[in-house]
Length: 277
Image (cartoon, rainbow, N blue to C red; front, side, top):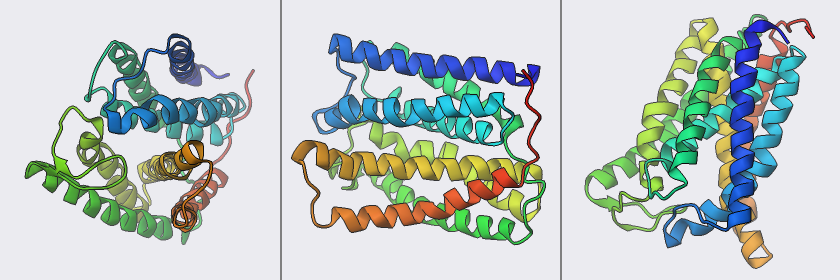
């Protein structure tokens, strides 16, 4: 492994180790993560499943790919790091108990990994000319759609009310609920990323390709989280899917498909680094 990737690999490995260690400790002790009754299942069951069977394996694959000089290494590491940073920015500012110490460590390692991986993300040197505007339009439309939704939620919270949606029941704002921070974290973290990606892609800047990589991985992970808290949760709790769950799930998967296409394009358009043992 080259020297310039050693720091990234070390910090990200610590993030994966802390994540897996926390899951094992949670399962052994039975000491629940802090959550209200409405979010207890998502936080204490779905959260562990999501990290243990999706994020940690993707992170390990990312480390192996990074070692071999593949552009998929930074892409996967960036996606996992961005997801952990976003999720624990929410969790650490919500209801707290002793798990807040683990949350703080995971948030710090996720943010540091995100900073370190930036310089390794695809530059899109050989990206086809038509791919850049296509990616920019896709991310721009997503930004408008999610921005409108999050804007409505932020306005509702400012008025002392909440919108009824996934994992949130309409009623007075309870600021101890981490889900109420979602619009704030979105506009402070995800929205600037999407905007930077759109501007950079149009101007054919290298930072645009890097921002687009993180924005697309963020989109894929967002859909995976929605599926975990929707159809997966329903299947675990009831053993079946409700009639409307399948078409909605297909719609979300279709929405994320262009993001997968964009990541494949960015990876193929990147000059791979030679493998250094």
